[in-house]
Image (cartoon, rainbow, N blue to C red):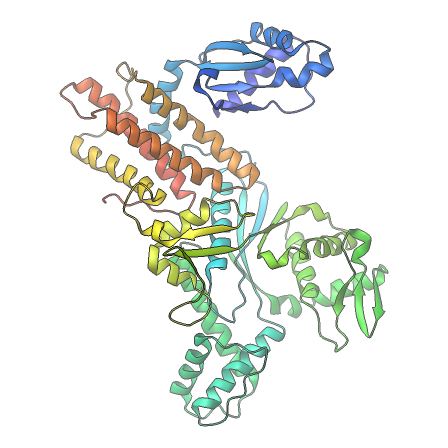
Length: 540
């Protein structure tokens, strides 16, 4: 049970004694100033209107009926009605053994109660290679899946492969035109074709294997060659980036199972469509969209929306309790139209939560880096990883809320100094590893901790206890950056403690206690980093 959960339970018992029924959740926060307690609640302020009493009076009554148990050292009431809670030092120290005993499971909880969650992310068209925008989405989706799994949710990570439609035809045409060029014929790339180096490489691969034997082959051959090669490269890059998926769902399979036709039939039969200018329109304005949307264009081709509706119906029918889509910033207008379609088809559109990731700017030498030196196009995810490493790439993406634009400073990410948060965190782990190796004994839980009584020690213990609630908050808010910021704060506290206190001394008892504290710190750092897909170095 996390500390906030424990304190909430104690406060509810006090309110029960006072016959006070709550209408809202109890909010417990960490005060900005240490003198205001380890934790504080404004519950008395929220009850003023209901009870027709002053918040100071309500707070006093709650305090008088609050059983401190083995957790609370002191309770103080502060104007205008805050209840400030100070934890017992013995309770704080008891967490050292708890963390050591639970080890990799410390911080794990069951708030998800096995709720089935589908997280669809990356889903880059297999018409090119992953760029840094995909990297940010991959980081968020994978982090969220790790955190929610750790919190008791049943999570499925899904990649939607757009292997049907015009973009795939254009891919096939682009590869064939480059292939024709290698065969000595004129290359006529379509205006909406693909010009990347990977397309030229694909054409070379086909030419090296077949010579000019495939000049008469139709576009389907080139399309399949492109799909298999590019999707394989995407999977390889994701694997290197420590991201894997439970399911790869093919868009073509949605067509093959006649799900698109089924959805269109249901929408037509429910009078949710109309024909205008030889196109089929969906009445999405009735559900808050800014304008109605086309399902079938005048040339008979489907818009992107049509198979996407069928795909989401398929996901809902698989029995998920929540669908989370991680999409690029250009998909913001997509939310209302997709939710409207789900409602029209009798589904609860609240099941769908679309996360929109904002833009990333790479900064180097004080200037924005826009183009790849290798391709002259957008910088790829693997180019960034080659430059700064997987750990740094994942941490910097993790440390910002998904809905805010961010700058990733390459010069900072390469610095071997405390200015670089990744270096600073990894250095904390490496320092602890070094000390534990020097100690030459296996740390074991102790019956008592009597030498750990410095202010820095209790500040660290407070931070370690907080981790359980940090995980819960990150899972509930679907915000991995909360954990990224927590790790940096914990590393900062450790470095400050390390600078002031010698760990291994001639005092064996004191050394044992400090070693256990360091082990507890390391466990929490590593558990937190694992939730962000970061593997810290043991030596620096």
